[in-house]
Amino acid sequence: MNVPEFLIKCLNAQYGEEESNKILTGYAMRRPVTFRVNLLKSSKDEVERQCATLGINIKSAPVPCAYFAENLREREIAEMPLYKEGKIYLQSLSSMLPPYLLAPQRDENILDMTAAPGGKTSLLSALSGGEAFLTACEKDKIRAERLKYNLAKLSVPRTSVLVQDALSLDEFYRFDKILLDAPCSGSGTLTPDGEIKISEKLVENSVKLQEKLLRKSLKLLKKGSVMVYSTCSVLKEENEGVLEKVLKEGDFELLPPEMPFSVPRLKSLKNTLLVPPDGQFEGFFCALIKKN
Ligand code: SAM
Image (tube, rainbow, N blue to C red; front, side, top):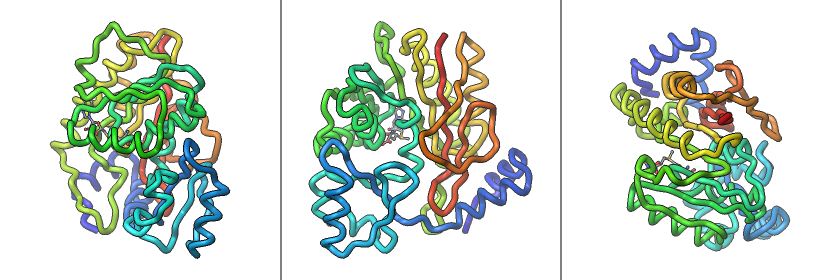
């Protein structure tokens, strides 16, 4: 794999040889395709039955309602009626983590600040039994169209989409919970065959935007409430660095990121969750923040 030299150096400096080798080995692993059952429209039973009828071999993944489709490509899954009807959604296991950490409940007003294409918005809704009120914000017009399409296809109720820069959201708003799945360098998601887009400039620009978006989301959060900050990066400057800088500007605390299932972890700042890339998970970072 052609991992850029600057990234190898950063990982070595941040994690030491042993852990950075773990990350580099994880990049080179081929992960099976994963999908989750959309509980807003279907059930594990229906999906397992239909896959069995079609002779498709699926295996339960460590995240509830998620499956590995070991012998299929995403393209082949996208041909299945279950997919076309919005009963399953192609999603990496790591991308399913933030909604579980945020634990959405009935009638809560939740902001998904950077939402397209909607994998996490739809899981937030499903985890609340379709009973949370969701506001999904997305700046990019084309990606926002994809978001609307996916939300309609997955029959996600009680959701409104805002096509706008989250940084310009009216500060009059207050939400019970917020998910900030921030735009990032993608340093957790390198794959053996994928195009490698990461650069030092992208990391630098991502950090600047992440800090601004985190400040904004903390303003929009009700006092006493929690939000999740997540990225698909394993670089400390985009994760712990952003948190350490922004959280000291007010009365905020990190709460233990307890997941209702087991997830691989690398050592990281206290009360944060850093998932190394491996044969099942992409590299990912999550933190649960409380506004006091
Ligand atoms: N949470 C999404 C999901 O699980 O499907 C993935 C979100 S992706 C990591 C980040 C998204 O943030 C991109 O769609 C990007 O266009 C959007 N974005 C970037 N800057 C933004 C801003 N200032 N306001 C709103 N959205 C923004």
